[in-house]
Structure formats: C-alpha cells, structure tokens
Image 1: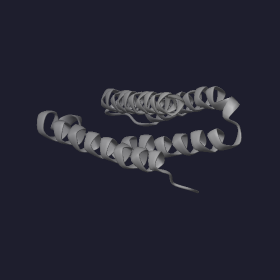
Image 2: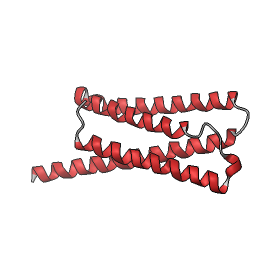
Image 3: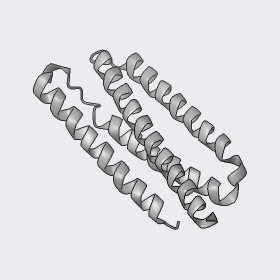
Image 4: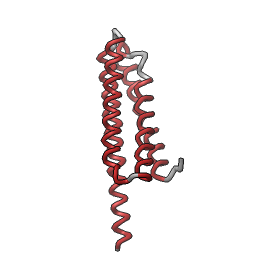
Length: 138
C-alpha cells in the first residue's frame, strides 16, 4: 500500500477528529450525565474509525484500478456503512436492556460527525484538484 500525501492527511486528520470527538463526548457524558455512561461506549468511535480507514482504502483502490466506478463504490460504501450501523443498533437494542437511548444518541452523533468530516474532506480535495487542473491548463 502506497501512502500519498492525501491519504496521510486524511489518516492524521481523521484520527484527530475521531479521537477528539471521543474524548469530548466521553467528558460530556462523565461530567454532565454520569448516569448515562454505558460500557459499550468505546466501541462506537472504534467502529467509525475502522470504517473510515476501510472507506478510504476502498476509494483509493477503486481510483487506481477502476476510476470510472468511483461513484458506485462511494454509494456502495455508504450503503454498507448504513447497513452495518443498522445491524449494530438492532443487536444492541435487542440484547442489552439498559442505556438503549444513550447508545442510539451517541451512535448517531458519531455517524453524523464522520459523515460531515468525510464530506468536508472530499469536497476540499475535489476543489483543490480542480484548482490544480485549472492552474495546469493556464
């Protein structure tokens, strides 16, 4: 696996975003709502962190081998993320008797955080790529 500057920037910034988000949410729960802390909390940021890495590696693999299929891969990854999220939520709510609402709120918070981060990152990437192409053509 070759790590170019874009992948390196994504991995570093994504690690910071997930890490800081996990610490901020944990601190907020522990300080303001200590009774709402649940033992499965650490697995939520870990799930989104691992899935973020997987998504970028799949995009990069597709970009190199089949760039014409990038949109299909993007939509497929979003579908898989949503499907896995639904399965995790269903398993948790069916097998755990307490803190169901807390789990759902925190899970969807991280879902939104990762979705917003990835959207901003890739929009900035595409804008930068477009700008470089325009500079090259001038």
